[in-house]
Length: 367
Image 1 (cartoon, rainbow, N blue to C red):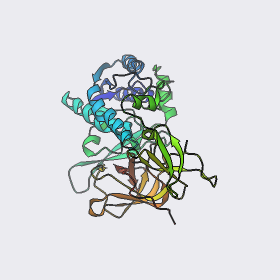
Image 2: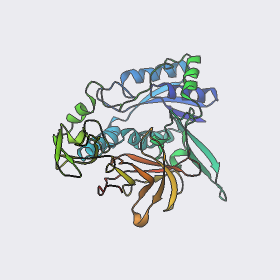
Image 3: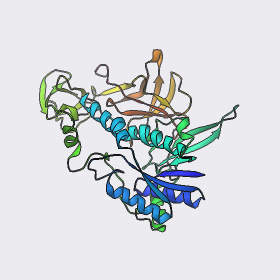
Image 4: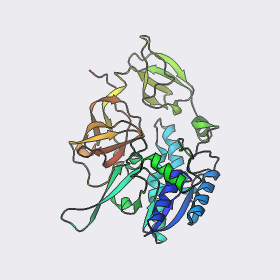
């Protein structure tokens, strides 16, 4: 099989390339040049590109660099900026997977004659024969290493993408990945994992990056229950629904959480825990994607609302085209713009699909 491996310059994609080579596949490495500005983390820095090239050389592979900076700007960076300007909290890694790695790159690989694209994500793709039809059905499963599982950031993938995707390290723990890299003496064996948004340089941070692209506005912190002004923030565009840090305490000494961000009104609404929680999250119509068949309204599932979040029981509802995830019990409010991934109630390691959280429609104290 001819496989194009997306080599980010990290240990996971390096070992993915090594495993596929050992298995006898015709492997070529490719690193994506995505960001034209300064970067010190992720797969966008000069050092990461060089690490990927050197690992490919160690493995005896051809290596290419694909320049997708224009697509990355229009599909990931610009929407990231717009979302903050609207008071939402986007997930750029998911949008990069959606639009770049498993769309543009996958399309290019197919045009170049490759059978599949491989990445170093800690998740698994399993092919199963579909009952009663002569087609193959693909499941997206959590990675074996629960601490490193990345199925959440791949939860938007459907059958068309999964049919051409290989995830060689999904059945390994991170320790096993590093041991394999050490055994092969790969230069990335001890390289730390990237933790930050790749296009935001650590020296300027999110505030510095967004401050260069949009106007940041100071705002009032308002108690959502009493409507009293209880503080100020330097930039409402940088505040996230559910945030606790920097919101202080109420007159009763209890912590306050952000329940809404009103950018035009320059207000951040805060409330105590019982108000800053809800038994449901509304999903943006049109944002839902499914790994296989869509869930029927009223179906049980598990929901995960962040990359390393705790899955919680829920019911998926879609009456009148209005998708909603209703939690089994109240949870902290989900920030608009965040992905809500749904997992199979009968097989909790299997991804069913995902949608993007919409803004809460009202703030009601829970009984």
